[in-house]
Structure formats: C-alpha cells, structure tokens
Image 1 (cartoon, rainbow, N blue to C red):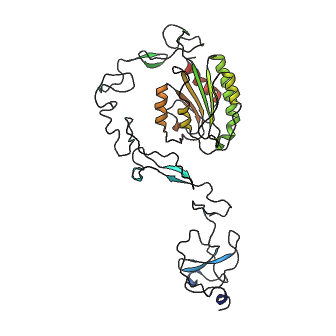
Image 2: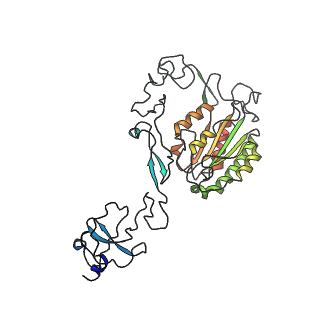
Length: 388
C-alpha cells in the first residue's frame, strides 16, 4: 500500500456535503487516475501532490462520493456573497450587490412595487418601492393588483363624485373635458385665468401679458445647478464647470436680478446633496462652481436632489434647475420620476437634464445628450424660462 497506508489509511469518512466552495479537478496520487477509477470516500488514497491555482498545497477532499485533490478544499471561481475570497484576489465579496425588499414578499412585482438593491453584507435596501397609500395617479400604489381602487370614479375624476370644474388639470365635473372655459393663451403657452406667466424683473419685457413692463409685481428668477460628482462623471468635470461658469456670466448680463443655488451629489461623504451656495448672486455662483470637483461615490440619487432643489426661496419665483447626471434617475427614498414631476408641477419648476439616460428625466423638462454644448443648450433653456 506504501504512501497510501502511511498518509491516508484512516480517511474513512463520509463526504462533506456542507462545503461552501468549489473543488479543483486534480487527479490524486500520481496524477494518472481518471475520475471513474478514483477511490470512493470510504477508501484510503495516496497523498495529493503539488499546489493549486491559489498557490497553496493540495489536500484530499471528498466530493460527489469520490476523493479529489483541492487547494485547502477551495478553488478560484466567481466571487459570491458568502464572506469568502472566492476568486483568490485577496479581497472578500468585493463589488457584489444582491436584490432586497422590505415589504410583503408577495407584493414584489405587483403594481408599482419593485425590489431594490444592496451591497453584499449591508442591511440597507436602496431603490425599492413598497406598498403605499393608494392615490389617484394611474398606478397601483398599494400593490393589490388594482389601479386607483377606491379613489377613482371616472378618468380624471378622483373625488368620488362630480364637482365644480377647477383649473387644475383634472376633469372635476366628470364630463370628459379638462379645465374647460378656465384657460387662456399667453406668451406661447396655456394658463389658468388669473394664473398666467409672472412678470420677470429687470428684463424690459411684458412677461405676464398685462400690457405693463417690469411692474412692481415682478417675480424673481431663480436657477439651481445640480452636478453629479461621482466617480463615473470625473472625466467630464472640467468641461461642465467651465460651461456653467460661462452660463452664469451670460445670465447676469441678461437678467441682473437672478439668484442662484449650487449643489453637488454622488460623493461618499454627501451622497444625497451638498449645497455649495444658496440664494447667491452671479458672483457667488461662479465662486461656488469653481469648487466643484470629482469625489469617488457610487450612489447618485438625482431624483432626491431634484426634489430638494424644487422649493423656491421666493414662493412666487420662476425657478429652474440645470442638472448634470450621467446615470439614470435614482433615489435613496424610493422617489420616482412621477413623484418629481408632481413636485415640479406644484411649484412651477422645470429642469434641463444633461444626461446619458434622457428617458429617466423626460417628464421633468427638456433633456440633452451628454456630448452637447452645455453652455449653449442651458442658456437657451433659461432664456425661454425667463421670457428673454
């Protein structure tokens, strides 16, 4: 029996069916025995020789009823979320995510409900949508398989009964027509009677179509810049910074009363939003934009940032947002594009988004492809918003 008797004569153990890592397919003994002639797990075998892919000695391991040689019982393979270094690169569970859901498991995929994602080993679930109170929005918010159940009588009529028509984008009296007799045209748009475009100060224009220019009831013009500074956008940071600084300079020449906010998002210290300047003039905005720089980060919650910047400082201001976000719309709070659109409608906000994923933002205002001239496109957007 030779080495067999000395080294593994007592290996008469059952196969380890609870092993969690792969087995290296290396023949035992002198390396010539084919798989079908290997000794079974109840027989003694010769010692394993050599080293495995991870660089450590091979040892005898039982698998599928036969003895095999494996590197400490492990072989390099795809990294999985198990607390081990499966691919033998010195790191554990690196770059791994798995799905998660904190709501009723039976509601996943029903209506608006969807699973989220989390890092391997983390308890925090991002981007999930769990059941919520049903509202009249064309969605199954409570994920019971029925859309607008209990809150909708006819399309556009969600009060439960016909009421007096209001200028609110709904068919309040349930006659199949929305806002009839309550709108008018001004400056190329349709507005509610008594609620048309506001006068813009300092621009020499009759923005509200009342026959007077720059009257005392003029409303301030506010612009917020939101820039993704995560690692995936690092290469474009210099171009974006220069374009936005030039844009502020041009706006100051056209609209001297404009006020600005500047914020960044997507960094590890401040994943949601870090405000660099708030309610400042053009000089303050240019200074704040000069401090923008790429900071490694992996979350880019652009939808959360859009809602945070939607509230104007002056309740009657015309407020616009210019966002630069290379990734699709994301949220740390299960916010969806429709939620942002509803908030924008409430405050009269529009957003220009320069992005590689325009389909995530097209209901929030105009979008522009990543390679555009940011200065030119944003200036055109803001001129229209200001009525210039």
